Amino acid sequence: MAATGVNNMENERFLRSVINASPNAVITINEAGEILVFSRAAQAMFGFGEAEVLGKNVSMLMPEPDHSLHDGYIRRYIETGKAQIIGRARPVMARRKNGETFPAVLHVSEFDEGARIFVGFVEDITRQKATERRLEDTQLQLQHAGRIGAMGEIATSIAHELNQPLTAAASMAGAVALTLKKTTFDGKDDALALIDDAVAEIRRASGVIRQMRDFLRNRETERAAHPINRIIEESCLIALIGAETEGVMVTSALDDYAGAVMVDRIQMQQVIVNLIRNAVDAMQETRNKHLTIATAKKDDTVEIRIADTGTGITDEMKKRLFEPFATSKEDGMGIGLSLSKSIVEAHKGEIYAKDNHPAGTVFLVALPAAKDDA
Ligand SMILES: Nc1ncnc2c1ncn2[C@@H]1O[C@H](COP(=O)(O)OP(=O)(O)OP(=O)(O)O)[C@@H](O)[C@H]1O
Ligand SMILES: [Mg+2]
Image 1: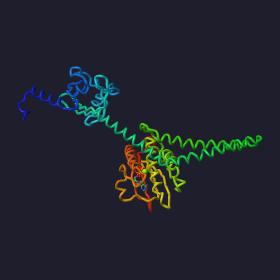
Image 2 (image 1 turned 180 degrees about the vertical axis):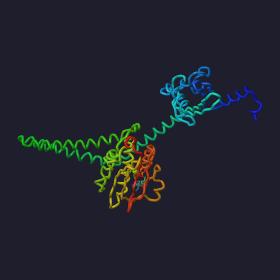
Image 3 (image 1 turned 120 degrees about the vertical axis):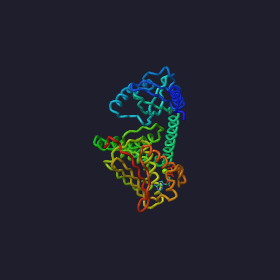
Image 4 (image 1 turned 180 degrees about the horizontal axis):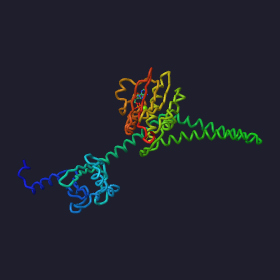
């Protein structure tokens, strides 16, 4: 069709129209990084007119560090043939004329017209990012609500848990006062030992409070390498409050070599707390109440195992287990497992349940081991 018999001029006009019709910015550069084509969408996106950019170095469209490094990127590619970016789409930061930076997806192709030419297609993803951000915020708020909910359920046990060490500490301090009043100097060692005990009890109480405060804080996510066993221990401090009085026997089998995971500590605690609370709930009516919490390292994975001897999960519930609002409990929200799953998957991990034998349920969480730990 049109291609036959058109002269060069028409050919070029045709090409220009195609380029200008693209909703994404089209920018071509030569080996020196100089801009050769700057499409209409590019002009709208970056705020530069064509005349302001033609022949200029394309790095003017990038913030640091790419701004300074871009010439090096091209040189390295030409010398080594090793492409970091050519042929695939990747997220970058770009800079408009007014200095504003924005997130974009850049796709670069290469062709040879006697000299090498690179053509970049740039898509401004500011709006997508904002939507993602809002979704993330909602997710965080939901998680926060979930933690407050979990705390609410165990509020009475918490009072008990705090009351116990504080009462003990108070009576120890009282005993010290008595000893000091009646004695001579001989009672000193006894008194000191009692004070040490009292301090330890007060520390225990404030440990519970600190853990609760951390857990309930509304916060941004922050990932770091944390020893998995420590996360489990901190979670147990909250999740097992009251469990003993309910007659649950707890076995903890934490692998000394389980190592660290790259996680948001509080989010991961939230997962463990949910799983432990579910396990304890499931054993309310059963005679045998045995909870096992274990960690293990398997190749590049750290596995957390929470097993109970409770009622087990009904077939009906198994189908919807991780769906939001699936609950069999009168006072349940049914969000514990759906939140846990989203948290685990955000950490590139897996969570699933299987039957425990002879009775009960096992929940398994597998997380990638932190790299430097290997
Ligand atoms: N260890 C378990 N044993 C038996 N059933 C379980 C176990 N864990 C979860 N379930 C079942 O899965 C359902 C969903 O669990 P999930 O934690 O999502 O919600 P919930 O515990 O009902 O309420 P919430 O956690 O929001 O307070 C539970 O209602 C229960 O029926
Ligand atoms: Mg639950």
